[in-house]
Amino acid sequence: MTEFVQIVEVGPRDGLQNEPDLVPLSAKLAFVEGLIAAGLREIEATSFVSPKAVPQLADADDLMVTLPRNSAVCYHALVPNERGLERALTAKTDVIALFTSATEAFCQANIRCTVAESFERFAPVVERVRAAGLSLRGYVSVAFVCPFCGDVDPGAAVDIALRLAEIGCDDVCLADTVGRARPEQVTAVFSQLLKTLSPDRLSLHVHDTDGRALDNIDAALELGIRRFDGAAGGLGGCPFAPGAPGNVATQRVVRHLHERGFETGVDPDLITRALDPVLPYLTRPVVT
Ligand code: HMG
Ligand code: MG
Image (cartoon, rainbow, N blue to C red):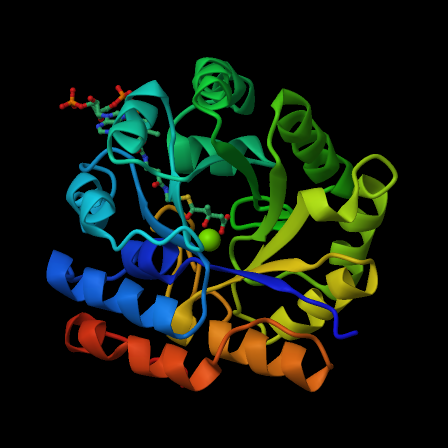
């Protein structure tokens, strides 16, 4: 039987948060509709962060309530604090994604607090997410390479990932924020985590600067990881991570997985078509 790999499409969130121009809500909506038509079922649609910090996603509340609802499709959103959770719950978000960092320097740059403070912010959020019966994802940014500190000690990434799992994250996602990880780093972090966590609680989110994104995915696949993020067209980047380029293009991930004999339920050509409504607002060429 063909093995299934779950794709989490982060294009509408990670993809659009770093674009200099604002994309109108109607275009975002059509983008998400196209992604669903391409077979994507887990879509990170937006972030309930400060609109001053990320004006590109200031329409999060309106977008989330306008998205087409279909019991097969789950909408994820980033939530940095209780205020964000309040907004996410009101807008009926399905999966709440917390985000912290393996290094203090990136944590300060991204969410303006220490790693310890980020966990203090998460505590009341987790309690309410559990009470609401929603799924929880936790990101470990700069799990392999930090734009401020260089290579990250695998132990530091493992420590944060395990803490996210302990507080109740169903899915702990290790992120190569600046797209510079090497496969041996991916292997080191995941093999350590797999001593404690089952592979179905882990996922990988890669950006692609040095052309190693698919090699890094292969390293995680090798260890039994079956959940990967991608952004349609290779859009994306974190505005608070200098040099953070696009995510790996979902089309490339899907084609690569199909070539390797995995099933994803996703049509890569339809992902390219899904990008049409947002293309007029993008400043960078997209991967097709
Ligand atoms: P802060 O400035 O440190 O502290 O924000 P604050 O709590 O005092 O808030 C400042 C202002 O924001 C206040 O407004 C708050 O009300 C407002 P003012 O009084 O100045 O008018 N505010 C909010 N408004 C709406 N919704 C909220 C909210 N929270 C505060 N939820 C905070 C700290 C983290 C909130 C802020 O810095 C922020 O939102 N930053 C955005 C961080 C972000 O989105 N980063 C990019 C996404 S992460 C990423 O890309 C990495 C990932 O892809 C994985 C990877 O690749 O590594 C996930
Ligand atoms: Mg990212």
